[in-house]
Amino acid sequence: MEKLSEEEIQEGLKALEGWEYVDNGIECSFEFKNFKEAFTVMTRIAFEAEAQNHHPDWSNVYNRLYVRLSTHDAEGVTAYDFKLAQSIESILAGG
Image (cartoon, rainbow, N blue to C red; front, side):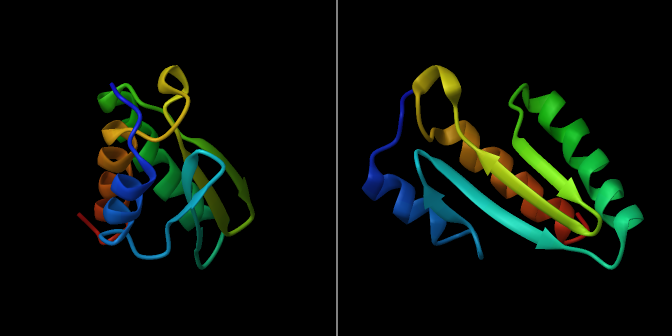
């Protein structure tokens, strides 16, 4: 998978509310009602990430989840990152 140009990344971000391009990755943070809700979403994302064979760098503290996507083999952002970000957005929307 080829690394996307900065212009392609900025164009892709237009479809992802709250996501930003930082240091060769796209990232976003989410806040939930409580830890259980945050962990439930993380579990759903984990299953999707495994299905896509593309895994986020992420962290969770109580009701907050931080997600960072970057394709390590390409040393930057690829279409894989945007595909997983769209899946994460779908999970958050209840899909």
